[in-house]
Image (cartoon, rainbow, N blue to C red; front, side, top):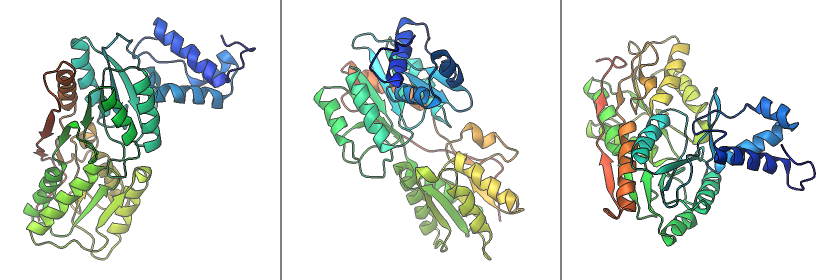
Length: 359
């Protein structure tokens, strides 16, 4: 229990108490922590205090949250020189669980332990996470850059990793200022293939929605534009939508509704990923239109969302678990001196389903 005479803040005391439970094994890796309500009642604390403690544990890589399920233990124990950190933009959303499972599969088999952390695609949180992980004496790091298309304000942390001879490998994108090991997809080619497929079906009124603050979005858009140029198609004014991380749950839907209310609406839309494609699909339905009868739709990543509705999305395949496994193998090769800065680029592949029709 917490000591009422302890001058340290209550949130800090709760955080340290939970860390000690995790260290002792009272809360096992993958096990769910008590709910916020339970902790509030058990320790007679405010909900704000409990949330602050849990938030710091998440930043430090001790726990991770799953929306709608709760908070879970991410700590896998520490063995000197055998702890690998994985820092992604998200942990429990979209394609990330499959990637992380792939990483853990290889690390566990090789005798390495794992610490997880996520940045929620926030640069300041990335700084906090990197600082905490470096202070945990990690052996290596797999890191997905945060807002990779924006100025990198955290270069000093990567310089510290290099100074301490801690190998790191970048996932999905690479900060252009760094000479880093990486494992990525050819996102420009992926955007090109998705758009070319629509053009081959006879579409010429093609719109696109892409993420502006991540390099994946910038490159997918470049591929989109390259395919249009190859077919001599000039994109119409207002047919290209760009959104930032903070607009994820508002922009795609509203942009699509505005787009479909135009006199000359598009016959097809290319989406940054499957998650965006489902928001676009919802907007299309709201306008009384159907996919693919009225609008053709292409996603990206071949996630579980691609087949989650009655409309089965044509999309670009993402290797997910295999990318995670390969990232872990490459980092182990770096740690064990077999490779210095491995670099791997996955070729995109179009998965054709029923969301597009020929004109």
